[in-house]
Amino acid sequence: MPCMRADSLGIFWQDLPKVKELKEKALVIKMLPPPLKVSILTQPKKIKKYVMEEGKKQVLMDIECFPNYFLILFRRLPDHKLLSFELKAGGALDTEGIMQVLDRYEVITFNGLNYDIMMLRLALIGADTGVLKAASNRIFNEQLRPYQFEKEFDLPYLKINHIDLADVAPGVAVGLKLYGARLNCTHLQDLPYPENTDLTLEQMEEVKTYCGYDLEDTFLLFRELQEQIMLRRAMSNTYLVDLRSKSDAQIAEEIIKSEIQRRTGRVPSRPQIKAGTFLYKAPSFISFGSQQLKDALEIVTTQPFTIVANGRIEMPKELLLLRVGIGESTYQMGMGGLHSTESSIYHVADSRYVIKDLDVTSYYPQIILNCELYPERLGRTFLEVYRKIVQERLEAKMAGNKVKADSLKITVNGSFGKLGSPYSALYSPDLMVQVTVTGQLSLLMLIEALELNGISVVSGNTDGLVVKCPVKLENLMEDIVSKWEEVTGFSMEHTNYAGIYSRDVNNYIAIKYDGSIKTKGCFSPGSISKNPASEICNEALIKYLIDGTSFEDTIHACKDIKKFLNVRNVKGGAYFKKDYLGRVVRWYYAKGSSDTINYRTNDNQVAKTFGAKPLMTLPNEFPSDINYQFYIQETYQLI
Image (tube, rainbow, N blue to C red):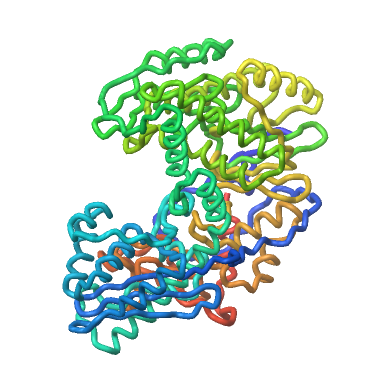
């Protein structure tokens, strides 16, 4: 079946102009592609539960600081009982009671390393509310790091059994309030009083209630990160280094540094940044048949990459502007990987075509090993350490040791991100470019070989391709992929799709024959790394594509308010009808509403809030004023 475009057929895939503000429109029904009618694989939804480890006592902790009031609030797990320690102006803090908690429990915080633990240690040596508030202001205003804070306030050593969740959470780091909203916290609220307020006794109680909400958000995040924390515990025991509060990339650096030190006796340190230029060196297996791709290779290997004063890498302009057309697709290279530029298109398998997803296994680690790439100042010891870790992971995976395999996967994949970080001992900008560009050129080799043999590549993205192959050429496709694997040393994983529906390369729905799905970008559900955005619309679209259920039936049948919610971070805070909401807002669309949520700083409308009704506290009952027509229309507009 040929690829289909809505703008040529006047149906579902019609490209729509972007608008600045959402305005209520009459419902427009468009023709939709036929549903796939595949068998639905029924799987119970995984609900993450917090499970206490045997012998492990834990408390969540949060601190609030005002000129005349200092609060340390603990929430014990698993019974969630609260214990507060308060210091009021002129009063005394129960330091003995706090030390008993610290001696008995593992303390869980969010961003505690950069704030709560420092403030706690200062309070324990007898600082009054005035000193504590001045210190708190300095942390925020001067961005004091823990080692600077220790020196500034002459803090004695204090060992605290502590996990900070801030770096454990995957993806781009955000604030605790936004994490809470993404995880459907019951209450969303900003600090009830400006931080420099002298509080009354009544206001102190309100702050304590607010602090309890923060601990609820901390618990939701802690529960969500159970798997990551368990892996970090296992790795800490293996490498005898406390890795519980570190990101994947930080763990990778810590382990590789410790292994290099063990082998060489040298502690790898962060290199000095040297601004300048360098050239990419293509490995010997990179070759192309067409003149266009030979010309592209010439550009890639002759135009210099630049290291600027802050250590970041800039691509040559010629490469940024380069577009490579192969078959019916156009590809763009970049620091993040190869990207095809398709938009508003779908492909389905039938008696004439198969749709295959081809993903390179552990792409970047394999490039490092196959091409024997290592930071020059670390020498081949880096490669020896890295190869050993990769091999150990494969052995653990084959032996069914999931904890060890997953732990080592963190090290293998996390190390790549440190190659481009000027703050890392693994920093090696030329190596990072060697890895990413080699990956892109290698994929272009495979794309060229497939297209020259009449096999269409309909999408390409970083470490994989989606291929639309005539059934009669499927064996040839397998041979081409095998030959590519032999030449490059990489290996592919194959997945068959019944259909793939793409807004663009980074936003798509792929449906397998058992009805299970793979989504990316705007079609993915809200998660710890993504704000919820009318998820019922995605659910309705996917259900239609799988079995033909109408959008209207799916949306009207849903009684879970969380699937209708939208969440957004608002810089400077937002208000609704003169009521201040906060810096993180949550809403649904209500019938008959023409209201908006607005920025407190300039009164501008917060994007996509025309017809919004704030829902900062989740209700016990499903609202009666849901604007179903809005959600139905949004579903039609999705792609």
